[in-house]
Image 1 (cartoon, one colour):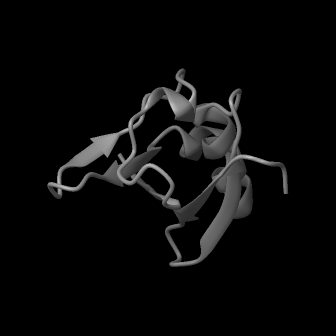
Image 2 (image 1 turned 180 degrees about the vertical axis):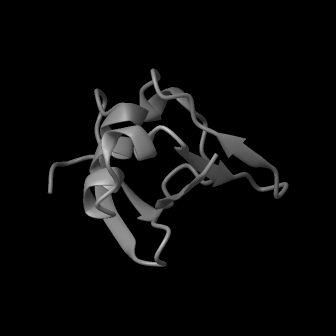
Image 3 (image 1 turned 60 degrees about the vertical axis):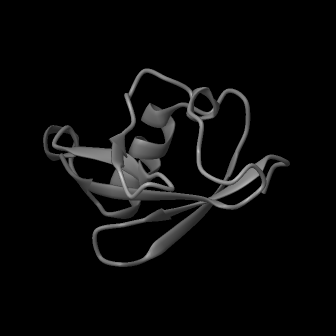
Length: 87
């Protein structure tokens, strides 16, 4: 695993995918990885997105074209918790 901020992506089947968030890692990169892991076909993958819950329990969808580090995730050093869900 590369140096970077640790993150966990909870997949649809309840499995967790552990990744390391580096400067150039985009939301699209993680969506592609999650889709591959869940064996989603390209047409089906477009119905899914990544989201996180902030400290006020608000749900935030991540925009596919942005880098993950463009977002302000809760907890400066904590593991980033993401979920892969149907949008």
